[in-house]
Length: 487
Ligand SMILES: Cc1cc2nc3c(=O)[nH]c(=O)nc-3n(C[C@H](O)[C@H](O)[C@H](O)COP(=O)(O)OP(=O)(O)OC[C@H]3O[C@@H](n4cnc5c(N)ncnc54)[C@H](O)[C@@H]3O)c2cc1C
Ligand code: FES
Ligand code: FES
View 1: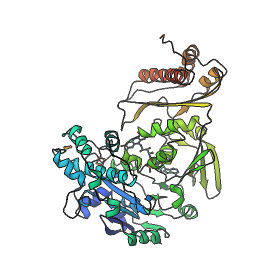
View 2: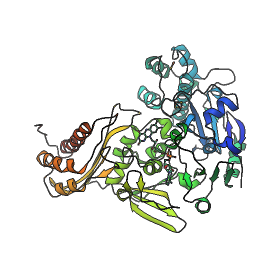
View 3: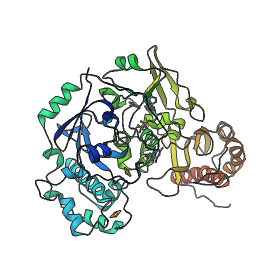
View 4: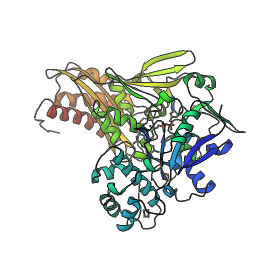
């Protein structure tokens, strides 16, 4: 049994025990190890000022670590056990600016400079990933990689110009510079031992297999996954954790596997790894993941965390409800499989017994005759929380609806299916007239509320329009029908 967290920062080993294991990485860097280059602005994962790069044995490519950006303000040290971390202080090479730093300097990419270390880390991570994948840099990729970094004074043009002028061939990538065989061997060896930390106020356990997890897990334990939901609550003082379990060191819990016509997704699989794995087979779901949060959040947050957090506007959930996805729930007594659409019993109420956790999400790959559309309506496209979400799958016989499954988020206490609307449409012609008739039934099945993101009337109108859009887009794309717009 180990009693301290072990990680490397900019190539130097750190071991942390006791209460310090629960510090946020940003605080540890700034106040405990004199690395104040990392800044904190929002402390909620929203602005990217605190961006650092991390990698672990779960992120390897050709025997080398693959660094990814995360927000250090919502990452506690125990989550970084057996990780290599690179901060802004570790980006320049032997007193020579990294190519991204030179380009930012040349293009005046900073004014107050507070966001700059976060941008530099995100940009260095981007160049590393592109070099590792043998890809070129273009404006679209720069914009995508930097979605999670906000700048309040420079404006984005100089920053994008700095990206445009980066010469990838001049860069010695971080995964080469920080490659360290003895560190990797040490991580391999330590990964065979569970980690337990007991303090006056907290118990923490990182098991290395499922059996060990059961020995600790009880009604008082709280699972920390990527902590992109939990970390925000902790920073806001809304959550005091006492008994914490993390599955981070259970190797196979990070897996995303394609088995026949299904994806099996482990509880520690991040949004980024899922996005890469499903891209070809599930393009609609990939489209939703593309506009989910930011790279920093997707590199830490998990699908399972999104499901268990049970937000009525959780973006991962609507599709799982309409494509017949299931959850494997595991406990000491064995495991059971339930449909995602039966998992939610009320606002934040789950069909999850004491001592049970989500072990796997099973996502079927749809048949060619099932047509899917997923929509997210939010105030802005990137890095925003949904006002209303929609998922629909329809199977037609000719132009008649053979089966239809529809789910909405943001229009009730949970993400919900609308069975009466589905029943009404089944067997009918797939046309605008029937969709308009279905609107009346839909209105009786959803109960939107007013909040900062929209009034209940707005949400009701959006829900009706999304059902219509679902028809119109499919009629145009798949049936090559001209849709007559008469509102
Ligand atoms: C800046 C920002 C942007 C965001 N943008 C979006 C967005 O666009 N769309 C969206 O839907 N969400 C968004 N989120 C919310 C969050 O990122 C997601 O919900 C994420 O998927 C949570 O995963 P996690 O691994 O971080 O969960 P955690 O925070 O670790 O855990 C969330 C909950 O799941 C429970 N849990 C974790 N693992 C298990 C398990 N195996 N079994 C049972 N319970 C478990 C935890 O105990 C906790 O209650 C955003 C968050 C931030 C901070
Ligand atoms: S300080 Fe804003 S994301 Fe961490
Ligand atoms: S330079 Fe001031 S916030 Fe970006």
